[in-house]
Every structure is written in C-alpha cells, then in structure tokens.
Length: 223
Image 1: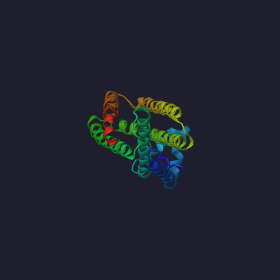
Image 2 (image 1 turned 180 degrees about the vertical axis):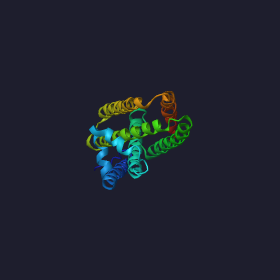
Image 3 (image 1 turned 45 degrees about the horizontal axis):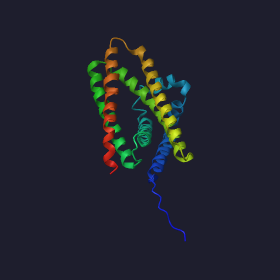
Image 4 (image 1 turned 90 degrees about the horizontal axis):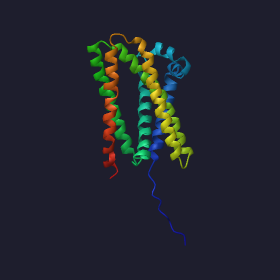
C-alpha cells in the first residue's frame, strides 16, 4: 500500500505574484510612456536621454513613478534571495515587505533631507543631476535583476552556484554604474565640490550601512 509523504516546501506563490506585478508595471510604462521608454532603452544614447528628461522631472513623473516602483520591488526581491543564500533566512513575503518599507522610507526621508541641505549649500542642481542619473542607471539595473531572478527561479533546479555568480555580477554592475555617474558629474563640480563629496559619503552611504546592520533583526520573522 502506498503512503503519502509530506514534503516540507516553502510557499513561494507570492514570488510569482511579485514577478507578475513587476511585469505589468513594465508593460504599463512601455504602453503609456512609449517615447520616454524607447529613449530610456537607448543605452548608447544615454547623454541624449539625460538632456531631454533630467530637467523635466514633473513631466516625466508618471514614468519615473512606475519604473521606480518596479525598481524598488526587484531590489527587495533580490535582497530577499540574497538573505536566503548568504544568511540562511527563509524566503518569506514578510521579509520582502520589511525590506520594501525600510528601503522606501530611507529613500524618501533622505530625498527630503537632501533637498533641504541642497538649498542651504547651493548644490541643488548638482544633487538633482546626480539623483536623476543614478535613478536612471538603477532602473536599468533593476531590469537586469528582474530577468536574472526570473531565469533563476523558474529555469533552474539546483541554482546555488548560479545565484552566487549572478549576485557577484549584479553587485559589480551596480558599482560600475555608481562610478560612471560620479565621473560624468565631475565636470559640474567646482567650488561646491566639497559639499558634493560630503553628500556622497554621508547621505548616500550611511543609511545603507545602518540598514545592513539591522538586517539581522529580521530573525524574529522566522519564529
């Protein structure tokens, strides 16, 4: 007589839902903001995209909001998978949600504070240029993350080696993007360069160091 064997498997249906929502956001951005979407994807014509859209943040708010949500979601999913492999943390929706709220809060509060500091120090234009360029590259990075995670989650059975390689490649690409933006903006830096460097060191890096130190507190979600 055959016996049923209960297999203990994590419920990952929420991951498929996140993938679907991200895909729908991508489609909406393509459908409703087709001109900017096409310009956004012209990697070899990035300076033209910056010149056309960096000074018109209000007019491009819809596209930026949709792709921003797409970016936040994929980054949090990427971090959730990373915690699973490097910190042995269960892949659960609660952890994804905590990461999403934490990262969104940090970005929002930092953005508001940066605007106040920029107005006070007179480097608002430099900071805005830096933010727009970083967000542009970050959105492209999120698309790369999205495709890599979909392939990893659905196409591979034993994918620990793949994910570690993918993680290393993703972090390398992210660092390269950061360096590219800083190099591009050096021509705008003059007497206010010191303030810009302080911004990079303080407001860009510090919040993420704080978040990383608090990630171990996610253990309470395992219980």
